[in-house]
Length: 143
Image (cartoon, rainbow, N blue to C red; front, side, top):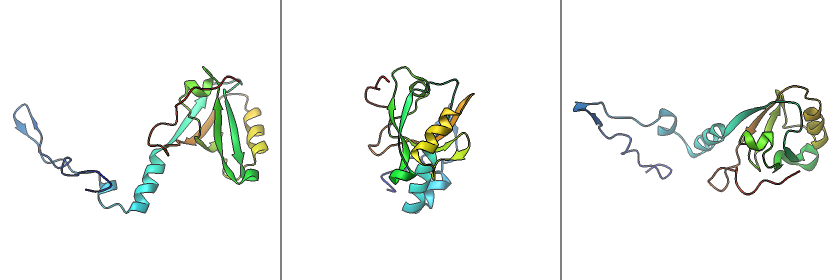
């Protein structure tokens, strides 16, 4: 057992309409993966991109920023808003805004970058999965 996964299931022989198939092998990315690399792989797999069709309002609120010593995160979603309809989740971390890294942005810089967007707003985000489920949960708030 590796991280709770039983790779014997992946190595089972499959038979399809009487035709024997070669044994299935586990994903090579996981087979020789250290816990540290596995955690990095999980983070990468939880990254996603959204393109919200302009103009504003975008239907979300931010919290955090470099000036708060916290990553920029989605703190609220408007019910039926553009962000909620794009499956953005409360608690998701904003990695970039229109191709500019958000890691060193203050809260105000991020707000201004979003406000000056005249067309589509493109954001790269990291899904908040601390609870083992999608962060798209709870009742979105109206703004």
